[in-house]
Image (cartoon, rainbow, N blue to C red; front, top):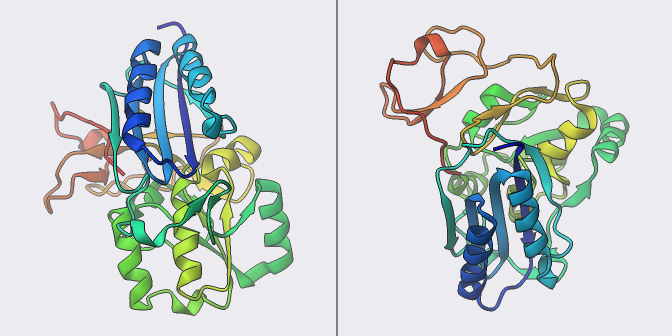
Length: 291
């Protein structure tokens, strides 16, 4: 493989026949020769696929020919050539699984009632303007934040995206309801729904980082408000934004600084953990985790 690439994108738009879209995406992906994961629902599409640059470009061109996906924000990154074991295209109730599909309303403009979008530059202006009144809110699984996060961010203790709604309903973050809350996640898709759910529960001033950590890292690298590595859902496991990325993770076994994440059970039965290469048992099979 000459130049392996990975693309990440999502589109919230009403789809009357998700199964038809699934079949079409399966055919498009197989024809192009890409691998990865594509989820389709009545709310839209969420996809991460990889392959040689020519294969990925073919897939993107074909996908953009569908009018509702024509303006998709495609995020490109370097791959390894073995980032995904196969192509998986599935229909699910939600394109990001919060477990409350009935609470999410989507129209031709996207999620109805979500947070205000901020570009990376707008985020910096808001931080300068609001100071300590502003709080970053991590919209990812807690383990992802162990190796990278925005400075002083609130990191909810969630193992899966489904854990957010019970936490919000419990009142665990009610003290944030009168503050400016900026949510962020990898590419932005989780925050599209999370901000809608937060606003419906009384959070007054809610923002979402448009394009997620990916777009922020492309803009500011490691010279802004982000610190550490970004977890990704493929064989790369983590990516850095510069040659001077700070290592903020700590090995769960020996405590050494590391940004390494492995997918295998630890003593407590958890399958995903931060662990340095020296503490990984010999012969451990590593595979990317599911969101």
